[in-house]
Amino acid sequence: MRKLGVFILGVAVSCGVLLYPNDSLQAEAATPDKIVYVGGMSAGFTLKTGGVQIIGTCEILTDGGASSPAGRAGIRAGDVVTKAGGIRVETVEELNEIVNKSGDKALELEIKRGGEVKIVKLTPIKDKNTEKFRIGVLVRDSVSGIGTVTYIEKESGRFGSLGHAVEGENKREMRVADGLVYECDIVGVNKGVRGKAGELRGMFISDKRLGKAEKLCDCGIFGQISETFETKSLQCAVATSDFVKPGNAYIYSTVEGNCPKKYEIEIVKVDKRNKENKNYVIKITDETLIEETGGIVQGMSGSPILQDGKLVGAVTHVFLNDPTRGYGIDIATMLCE
View: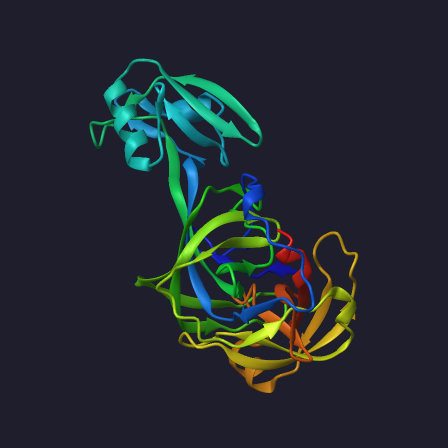
């Protein structure tokens, strides 16, 4: 199966995230009388990495040959540089400036690797082509991608999206700090076929802020809707997991433009106790959606699942051997994050 968020720096991959816990952001558990606005709208996420993230090392051509100080020092993909020369760094530009000013003197980097903080010492070398000092890393300070908003809480204005964690190109969970969420226009679809997940292609509407991402975990991306965002979507109650049963249901998703549409599905299986948040097996039965996308595609992650008029979950994965089938997460799990 394949997770469905599309993060588009480098390759289209699943979106997953490990973030710093914030108890104040936890939502109350789902109850039958809790009212939310149904999502289904596509959103563009720009997420900060909380430092400068290493995505690879490279060699630098010098007068004495090619070399990589970072590679020799043991720096590797997934590391996050938080300080250079004792100075806090948040952007690629800040890191480059400190490295270049260091010249050919030893430089100390503070990096985060998993849950550990490490100190790495290396010496920059002069790039023969640019005449600037470098350490031989490929870096970024943010990631961007497309996903789907699942719900907006009516009283608080908090939203939940994606329904799963955010992963990088190396399939490892990324440490991401916070970010901004924009409205998004879907401009095309790569249809899903057996053995290969499809994906939505979208454009951020940069002057239309949807909200701010404040918490990321294995249940998705959560945050606060902007006060300027007009919520025009359907209101409905949230169901407890005991309410859900195999049978007819539907999802709201956006596969063209920026307006969610309703599509018929079937809940094939219910597994309330699944610890991987794969609480439902679903099958797309709507012929229009199958014709447009082939079934479930990347970017539809977070599409709300409704049954008998109540919000019960969100789409999270697609089966690679059958793009009309996938998994969904129980909405109670998302609301408890």
